[in-house]
Length: 328
Image 1 (cartoon, rainbow, N blue to C red):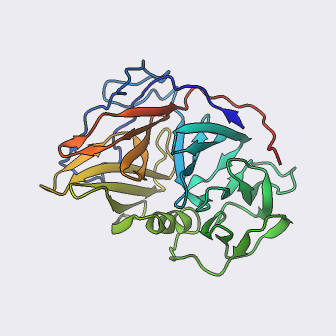
Image 2 (tube, helix red, strand yellow; image 1 turned 120 degrees about the horizontal axis):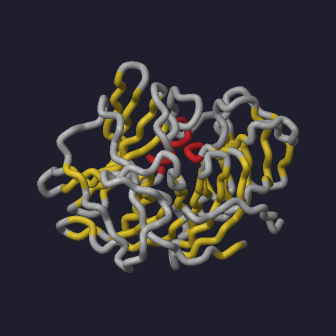
Image 3 (cartoon, one colour; image 1 turned 135 degrees about the vertical axis):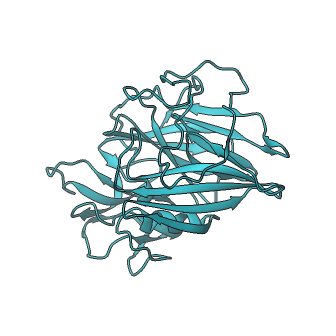
């Protein structure tokens, strides 16, 4: 595996765009600065916190292993280039696995509790490979080389959820072609831990959130185009992290697909809510708050009056595609 170099800087992300279903009247968290005073990342950011449409930052989604300090960072950008990076949360070390020229559907992925394997759904848009255009795979983290390979037709369903270190539920209703099965991990396919009408990402993503400690508190549908589902996770007695999960078919914003998340911090003392612009992913890692913003990964600890000093863990923006073979 390739150890990644030191980070470069901090950046900022965009504000909420879906005003039609966004909740109003919240204050906005001040722009967080890296406590070690590194320079700005190579991302063009405007005064209101939105990024340059010609040079959007890398998009990040993180899978946390619930039984070990391991994690996976799925880095996308440009749109048809995806990297998978191992994150050792105990020492905040990042190690590059492999790149894919294609698309990984991060909301249909999962990491085993011990962090050794992951399941993912991917597409490269060609029909000349053994899996054709789309496939679900079980691989050793942080690599893409499949130990179990399932050929898919189209982009409905796919991916799955680990129910234990050696058992995974496969998100499918109409079957698949099993091309390879050299992994010891057992496959289940009867029903997801919690059913959703969505035939793609939400059928995996929402049960994963709830399994990992998030509570669904509301679902709001605006017309037929937008759906907002709010999840909450208690940080401590004073603060709650809120995840606003959007599903929209009416518009695709720059740097966002039809599914995207925004985040807020709610004070349990007075009920006030603070918006966190640009946090595309956020969660708890033990007692610390970690989040992705403008292609960078950050952490902090909450104080009585709000977030404490912010630490920049890594800037993923400078990374570029490189062909890497899996070591197995």
